[in-house]
Image (tube, rainbow, N blue to C red; front, side):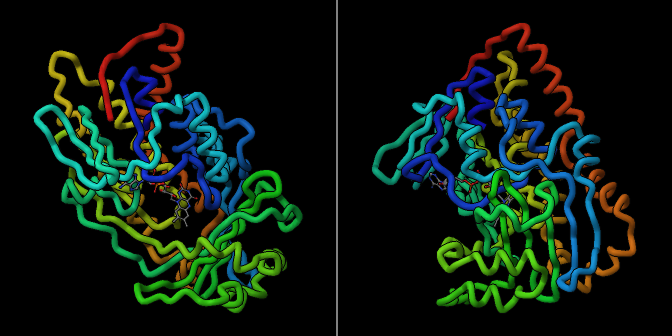
Length: 386
Ligand SMILES: Cc1cc2nc3c(=O)[nH]c(=O)nc-3n(C[C@H](O)[C@H](O)[C@H](O)COP(=O)(O)OP(=O)(O)OC[C@H]3O[C@@H](n4cnc5c(N)ncnc54)[C@H](O)[C@@H]3O)c2cc1C
């Protein structure tokens, strides 16, 4: 979002509670809807992570349920599908972005609307004022609380997840695998070079107690599902599992922000990782919010109205993605068995249609066209953001 605001001539500063801007964790799937926005933001993704050609879905006994033709989807939607380690994605996003505009160690503890904009108080006693506050502060967003949106609910599942350097586990690095069993599921997704993203999804509840030796628990659930799975399980240790598990949460999608405050990304719509859409949805938020701000005319300059337009434009589509991501089908082999009766073409077509309907295709194409024209004719916009 900060890249987009800077591109459009706004004065933007990012405040983050973390002590540095390095990402840990595993990898994320960037689908064509997210890839298109990254291109609009001038983020060079060439050679990053691993391009995918298909996703195979199997049962724990090796029965094939479906194969999604990701290459066909990428061709139809005009942008690739890739698996990118979070650290690499952040590096690409930061490339060319002025580091002085990022302030780390700034934990927001209070937010207040003022007659001229928004005031944010930080934990260290300092504060800052701006015309606009975009709360992109994730699952436990403080800005979300201030605008009065309800908190996130756990879905009853969690992921044990990470990256491991294992080059010869999968036969084809362009193929991702999801395996679904009776009481859990797993994924093995190549993420570039020798990196392999692994995940194991299991039930989770608020009274969950972390096992002392989690790898033994994971092995007891998933051993014997396939040769590749057994090799990954043999290589994983409790150290690999240390940051896990990641419980899945879902936010009710808020109706709107407040005055000069709005929400973006997980702060607005945390959803379970089932469709691997969270980052992609944050990128779509970015595209629509940048447009809302770019369309502010100097005559009316009605910032709250532009923000409410952004929220309204996103709400229905992101709610649909969140609803589908929250369906429990991906967790149950028996529920998914009828899916094997449908053709692979049908599965691919279904996901393609879903992405088309939820990704603001017309707006996105117009923005891409306008940006291409603007590159030839430089323009300058005035304004400011926080
Ligand atoms: C197990 C798992 C797997 C996933 N896999 C995928 C995938 O394959 N593809 C995909 O698209 N998505 C995936 N997601 C979802 C994705 O990680 C999120 O949707 C994405 O990170 C949201 O980005 P964000 O910037 O909105 O929030 P975050 O990444 O949570 O960033 C929020 C930022 O706000 C900062 N912050 C928080 N509170 C404060 C405060 N009070 N003051 C200052 N700073 C603050 C934090 O330090 C952080 O830097 C997955 C999620 C999980 C849990």
